[in-house]
Image 1: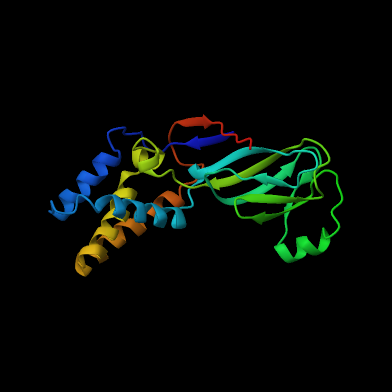
Image 2: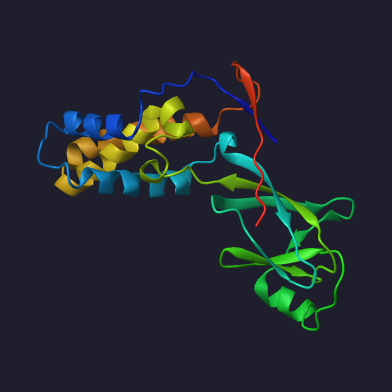
Length: 213
């Protein structure tokens, strides 16, 4: 369960179509319709690399299988904050070399460590039963094109989407002068969201997120 403090209200009119039309309007161009979706895609990659908002923090339950050392990670995972296995305590990260050394002869039991292998984790010891591991992680922002044209970020912080997409568009058309202005807008907007803390005023909502492979 994740508690989210919303500092501004949602605006459902701000969506993928709004963003594409706004970018075309700001550029004063009608000939970029086919490539604006690419600008949005590149902007989302950049946003996911730089954004560190508490609104991205989620908790998932990873369910193990007895005798199987690997478990799939949440599909929207960007980075892992931590893992724990009640009532045994933390499940600690190990780099691949250390994990492979310490678990060269895999035993079985409650997992105490993990390494990351692609989109999965490998647990050590190998689970000897079905366990529920609590995974606290930072989720990536869902792509607009894959999420019915909307997500929490564009509804609550459309300025970040607009600025990031304008930067990609201006790179494409080679407008260095305006690019500097929009880079500044993006940096300021992303920094403002990243620095928002729990003391910020606004209504509180509860969002429960779980994932079972």
